Length: 211
Image (cartoon, rainbow, N blue to C red; front, side, top):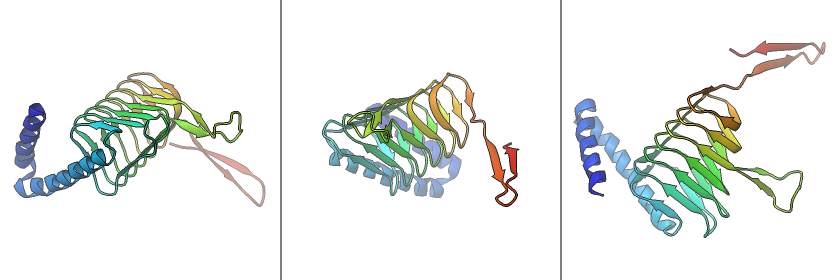
């Protein structure tokens, strides 16, 4: 705990020098509000959440629907506004130290999701470790899998990460990608996309490759 407090004090001094005292104060009041909200959810789900200090900004929420569900949050995790972390059944969501989750992200866990330390997640990212069992192959209405995201990964805006996905350390996921399967470490993942335009009168078809 003392090491955490020491780091907070050093950060406050550094931010005051770089941003100016006034703007540093405004920013840190926002941070204090986020830390307070984080503590509120920790006490709300006392037996389900394992964490130290983390920040949960305005309108972001944690929803836990089962006494077997678990949320592990590392040190100095920062979750910005309008994010949703939802855990149900035997789900275990683990978020490593210094992870940054931007606005409007949704993480839905019913089995296992791991986000490695120092990973950065851009706005509007959706992560799911399950699919709906629309073919009714079993009695369970969900098909459950895992999502493992390594350390120091960058995930771009509007990315969707599906069940049974493993992303290696230092990988970069390009904005707008849909990811399923294995992404090796130290690689850039880009979905190949093309725009298809159909003329509904003459029934002609045009294919325009995206840049």
